[in-house]
Length: 476
Image (cartoon, rainbow, N blue to C red):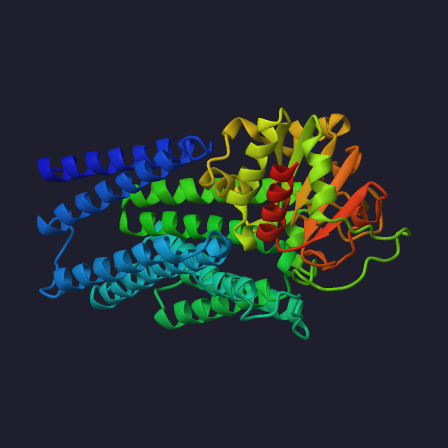
């Protein structure tokens, strides 16, 4: 290894250190922005190091069109990245992440396909020079995982965008088809491991993996899409790590392993927050998508509607208020409105906190990012385990567009959300719910909280409802 290659590998290592530290900083809303910038800096170092290696001729023969192609790719990818970063709303971030997963998985698979075809041609030209088993294993895993991620992420994104129904789509004999596709991929992989290189067998594996991604995600309901996206994100990282082994690139191995491991941990945490196993989620069938409209029934009682003035009196004269933000707040982009209302209440001596459920919204941390964007103080954001005991001492719980994560039905067996950890909103002395209608949440069931005698329903868009409350508090 000469001096230039040594320097490049040290630059790659420095970039990888940036990934690790950046990922650690993303663990807190207070440092997440700097962590993101640090990780981006690490990626820039990795790209520059790779460019130097290519320019020095130490990355193999490079054709005359390589640099224009690289430049065009960077311009298109960077331009699209900048455009989406500036234009995509926070509420659309999950489907954007899913598209990124698809691109990452597809790119990793293409690396494996290209390298395998090259090695197969070498094997054909040089008799008795088989592809090493460790290379075949890394390549096949890269191709399978990347292909599954590509099509699965596209289906998940389509469900979130509304292009594909958020309800579970059951294919006749779907589980048998999915099992058969998995068997084809496994048998094909075995044939490549023990036999000579075969590009046709590789493409059979690719086709099976691509269809598997579709049949795996279609039967999964909209309520489970956040978990599916996290799982596919883990798949993307694993595929990238395998691509790193294929082309012997340590920065790809490290970055992919970090993404794969963090995605797997996040998937487990989200599944636990919904009291469902990952296997149960992948079998499918939970949730029919959000917004199913219907009257609350089956729990007894009636809905009590209140006006902004009535709600404002309760809030203004409370000593403690806990705000429970949900996806309705994100859709209405009402994070600035809730901060304004909280500041008004605090000026009157009211103690205000925010209760954050792990799966409020469509992604973990969704509410944290939205509220941080509105400059809500970080110490006021309380996770579910920390804030739940405080509902017993709370005067008013203000629920803004949150549904399933506040449904007391989760405490009873026999409900689709049974066993799901919820925010103990019904323990508060008084409850105010801002909601556009009596529509149901992702799970497609009625929320028994709305029938609680302590609950007052303020029917309004989250932004309009909060503005009305703020005006009413100012008038007191």
